[in-house]
Length: 214
Figure 1: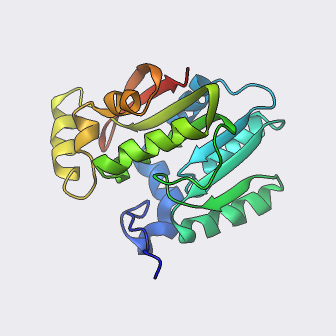
Figure 2: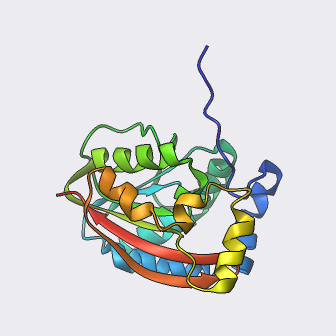
């Protein structure tokens, strides 16, 4: 019998999944942060981009809008949230491939993407799966390809430390708040790993990271 992969839904509970988009807009400067992430990623003409943990495809749609000549693919482990994503893509009338899969075991061959972009996904993963997911991103990237990540980072003030302490009981946040994501990316094989910026949100500090496959 095939073993089912356990995962934490985007809003921690399945019944909150339909509220994902409005709740994110109310609690986190999502549009602004993802805009910064996309500019950081520097997608070039005709590149192939994976939105790792694409959720409702808001970010994948923005990538496609700004880079219509690029092939954009979204992957998520949650079939319910992918149903929402498919409806949004259909309404937008664009071509974006959506796949059901696990970030720690990607269903793609080696070296087929130029960019892997991930927004608020790694904090859902256990320490072991964070390393596996980073290793999988490294595997599917072409030489010279880049990983760009937006996620919770090391708290930069007292409020962020308090919020991180409270939230860690319901999420896999310890690696994030200890500032260990760059170490995880290096352990997966990436070079030129950088923290590119930190931002304060209602739920604590979020950080931007970049890494390259040499």
